[in-house]
Amino acid sequence: MKHLAGYVGLAPSMYQSGNSQRTMGMTPRANRLLRSYFVEASWQAIRADPIMQAYYRKHQGKNVKSIIVKVARKLLSRTLAVIKTEVPYTIGVIE
View 1 (cartoon, rainbow, N blue to C red):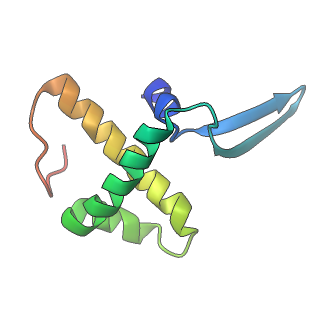
View 2: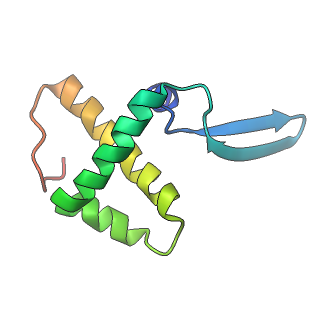
């Protein structure tokens, strides 16, 4: 999942030098088109899926852009689960 999230651009980038380590924003080397698709799809998922809406509301009060990236990553993991298990995605069902 980490590699897929890095490819799509939904994983945070890391900067390491010696003993110092910093977490930065989203990875710059990513498939920007896929990332934008997942971010837009996550806005729709918040409106349509009550589980995603609850996840979004749980993180309310933080930066909206960082919350939507969290939702997009959750949507990406659900998409990967649908591909692997070949079971259709059902709105409002936790697996």
